[in-house]
Length: 479
Image (cartoon, rainbow, N blue to C red; front, side, top):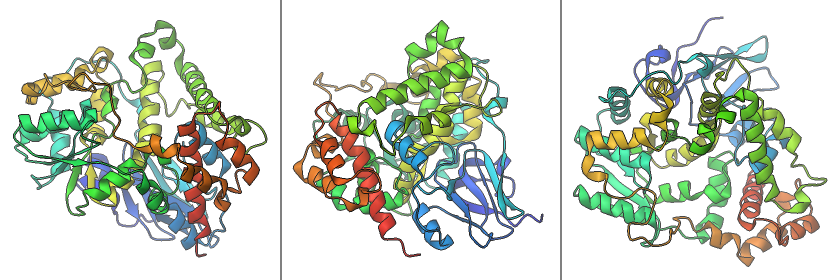
């Protein structure tokens, strides 16, 4: 088959799109030609890209499931595996989307049309990488190179700054590169993230824009947020879109910390230090992920447990970790799951929110940096040692400001107002009367779900509101 000329379909690429294996960035390259088209994702491919085979046998591609469904003229059907994944994991897994005939292009994967069907080929699977072998390169050259690829010629990016480790590394890299970023931070004046961001900005002589979110905006913009994220971003995490809308600047590079936890331990340092867990292999990781999934399911209303489209069995099948994709090492296997599932899907949906209003970029998504971190000995990735070492290298005077705690010693206050929204009568009434949720629960079942005293209110509302607005978008499809 003749390979059509390649271009960047989504994301950002520093290098030659015809040689993506040698390029920096996070991207999908390919051609949208309906018969000779193809697409190939980078090591994560965080910004969502979808494909489907139309009834005419064409390979159709795009960045939005609802739009792709209309283009392909597929009648809408719900993919209950994806619905169950969102309910019990908090995001989709694998190639699943809310439509059973539309697929998310997986990480480091190429798709092309062969004999009227989509053929997938894995490229540079993490199972073949070197893991946990080397000491820290204290020059941090790979990190600075990946950061430079984010900037291109811009020296005045937007930087989202919080109390966390990833954004502080980005600030230190900006200072090392001679950047003067526009700093923004989310939360009220009492929120720890804003307090810390303000101290950091003052330390380096920059202003910080405070962005406080309103609970009302979740409902006001819910249908648009759901459309932007193809319906899979949970409503409790829509702050990314609401925040981005307030700093809208379509031509500006927006530095975000996506996948920074690849050099830390997203799940638990206690878990990764356990000798028993380290000996358990891929099966141990699957078992642990299944337990986490069951624990999340336990928080949902009891009537979700019986005679409901949300089913644990559908999710458990998605937690099987094939040997050609996942390393043998238990902890490396967990890191891989984090990168190609949680970052690819959950954080990728957040990148889609950013991308509606700016040009989001993260050096932590770059393949060369990820390969170096994969090969880094585990102790450097525990206790946030890598991040602290990077800040110490480039801006040591930022280290005395506390991480992930209130600098005044006060109780932590979240930047998100969703908890308040989830307990409102307005939301309960909306969900009870939502015809868009009839595919999932009838009205009486929704009443029982909303009034179940044993359920976690925030978790239940986040899931149901996600499905409500996704349902609204399916009802508005023009096929």
